Image (cartoon, rainbow, N blue to C red; front, side):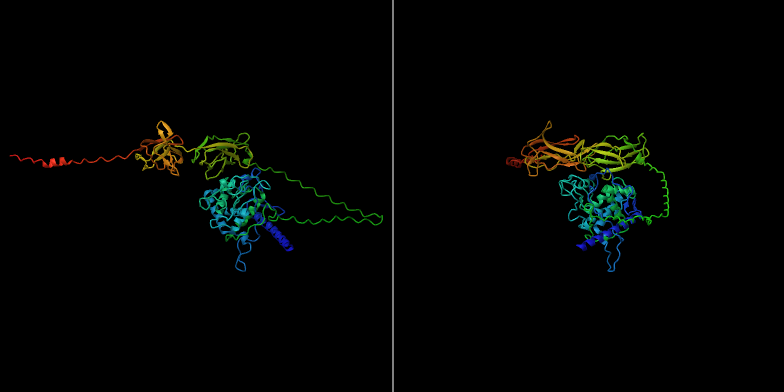
Length: 587
């Protein structure tokens, strides 16, 4: 027991040294916004958590994280006497597949969002702090963890209170949400932030390629430039709203920027300390105060004799006059008093289309003066699969010299109905503006057959050709339009017919009405094969689409016509003809 306790003490001392050196290196480097106070503690300027950042709006729901600090020695591998690497390889090295995922995600963001300037080392820092690089790189060849990495239940007991949002689909918990996977996304965030990073057609939070790409897009979602101090801090705090979290991530970011190396999958060191167990990286202990000896008193005179007069203590020097306080200059954001709509028209689009109208908003002072260079955030609120350009539910735009910011184009999804686009000022608590956007169903205004072949069949048979139609809207292809097909009684009676041609269901039973049909990408709808019962006659098939386009197709059921026989001469006619004498030649 004493030996174990001694090891813990030595480890605590080592971590104290690690903290001091790592912080000093971070402060001396060009890592933005980091400094060290007189006690060796890290400070990051304006890095306080955002007071309005709700847990459910962060990537992790502000779940616990690993608090270990980087090791003292260089992250670069150094040859040892035995030809191997230093013992810190597992701490500083990054498992091969996980490292590949970080780098590919950063490369992808460099193409799609070059202004974000996302370094792969930031993904590595967050990946270390969130899951220890997927538990030391324990992933399969595709980058998926053998079992889910789950955070604690976010039930409000010591953590945020986030009721279940995914029916347990991602985290296996149908009561409360949990952070999931190598980058620890909560299900409600993964629902919109998830990405397919390995190209397998799935968005799996337990796959390090998917999770790293999602984390990259998440960190870049507000148009942040991560090469600037303020945006880097904002992005990290949006991932987990804690100053300690920010400082830990910044420490690992700087560590990886100095260099790292690849290690085999599954050989990484899993951190021990977590923010929720009190056994994180040991804080720098306060030095034990040295007792101050009491001031010596002059000796009392012996007997009643007088003593020499005591010298008068010198007067303390006058306190220096503090310099006059300087006012912090106001930024443009500080002067914003309210937001005004700048002429935005009705927001409406057909499912799958781009909204023609874009939100235009103006930032103003209390006197109505325009405020330029203010960042406006646009957020999609509500049950919608619409996105801004780039597939995000968030976007930012900077106000111009007229104080106006224009949101990126909105892309409607397939979910119809209304949702809200909320515009707010980044970094300023002023009332936002809400805009209602509506997605309507795809429609067609015309239908036509793609063939002019007559549709005929014999009683009890099947039609040789399937009915195929093409839908258009304003002469353009109408794709994804809902349609129904019904074999009707007559042109004046749209009720379903009870006899004549029919379709078949999965069990082979007759069906004379088909619902849930939809045109393909070319606007074409091909109906299933038609069959006929024993009733002959002319029948009608009516096709209706959303938007009011209608087409009635004629179907004919008739017995096949018998071929007309060639007349055969009778025997008497043949004999008579052969017995007739030839005409005599003229004399």
